Image (cartoon, rainbow, N blue to C red):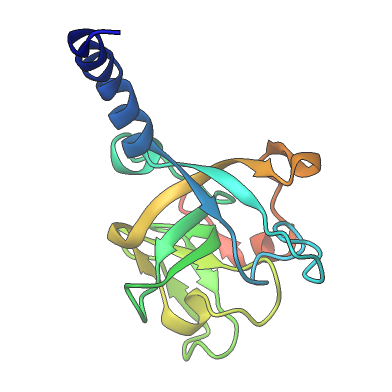
Length: 166
């Protein structure tokens, strides 16, 4: 194969590669905060891996209650967390300890996130999260293969603590 043909192949496929890596990314989901939805059996050596959609968050600004998102930790920007959006701007949340206020209205440009497991470090610890810290939304699980599926449904427990703005 000639060098010109190889260069042409790179130039031809480069836009597609950039599109895929800028708009979608693979992430390994670590930790127990989203159990039992993600990483349901912490005794096993594997961790769930998902395809995360950046396009819907950064370009289309589409996110909703129940979405599982990846975000930069408000405490440490070098650490990424995976949590579920419980409330969006304008919603009122009845908080859990250790949050100092009993209720909080989610301000414009923020979301309220929580882990599916009880006692996780989430908005009940650090408050509403600015949308600028949200990186992507979980589109589907791809590993392990027996868990290949669309995003699992949210648990019903936290919805009773949210008064929506709609």
